[in-house]
Image (cartoon, rainbow, N blue to C red):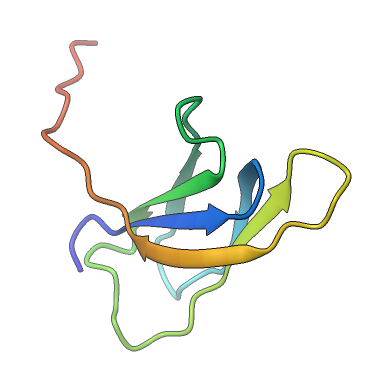
Length: 86
């Protein structure tokens, strides 16, 4: 998968906090949105393309003191790309 992005759906507000490493170059950005605080996003910038034959761990934690439960993990769909001007 090129430009891999994953959304982790939690049963409560959660944050993306960790990911496993694939051999070679690795870079991951974590994201959240105030519109959907129960979704933690992982944007995999490397390895690119993301290999389909590896086990990969996405780590999340609850934003409160209660345990978080994962409801689902899906490919994160985004529309368009923003060009950086600086």
